[in-house]
Length: 264
Length: 97
Image (cartoon, rainbow over all chains, first blue to last red; front, side):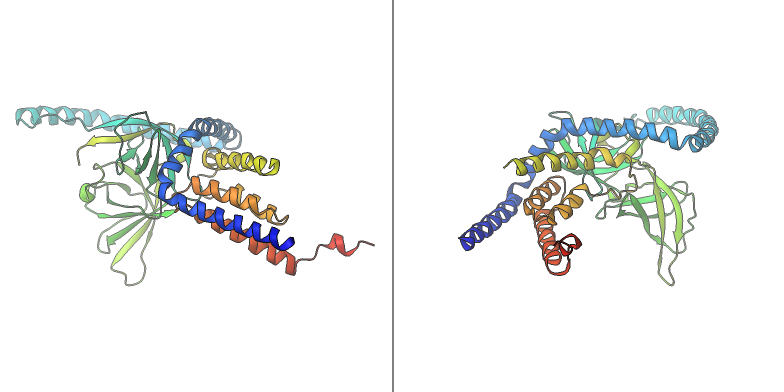
């Protein structure tokens, strides 16, 4: 009797394992179904997490926040002055383009999306997208402040997954803003980035701003990525690397743009 | 059956917490895995079905091939049970009568 029961248990065990493995043939549909089913609950949990973390940030980081605020106010005024100058240049640029018959093009068109979760143990974001939207795999995703987030990995009905730049299999072409230094941003997992394949002769330093380059033909140019934290030079390696602090912060994100049309 | 359904609800709740609530508190990316912790604890009580359910939910919220987490957690639960049975003596039983 015991042997029969044990045999039954083993049979059930093997059958369930095979069933789960067989789901690989319909994994997109299964994950899509559960993703759409869970999206409502995930939105509630995401908003709750945002509110609770904001509340505790206010309590435990009060002094730090005050100091950061003062720095940001000062930086804001500096940037405002730069914007005033750049607006004149933009106006001049538009007039010249019209005069030369080049036309004025919109930077990009986008679809709004809302983050509702992050895959467990992966740097993959789950977003809620409008029903029937023209979003497809490979499209870039940015924040409203023009900070790069990643690209669409899979579209599943009313939800989609976004491969973050920090995902281990992600790599994109990048450059240092204001310098002719190019390299590749590689994901290291756990929200970490590495600026790799920078020629040894090129000068990079802590604090350099990194932006996207159009060399890879995937992302529009000059979208913010992050800031160099630490330059790593290893022995006689032909290339140098640098650790990067990404500007994208998953906890502070409430809205995303999926770029459906853009100029490279 | 009640036990199975209650753990489906509990582990689904943990999956939602991990994907949507906890990322706000662990921006570095290292989020405690509530599902794996539950599976480890339940393997002390030979509840292997918890490993199936937990693995299934991890597979749903993952980009890995389906079954990766299910097979991994079931193997982990079995391995833990073997180690506990062979090498761990419960001191409470040692002092009984």
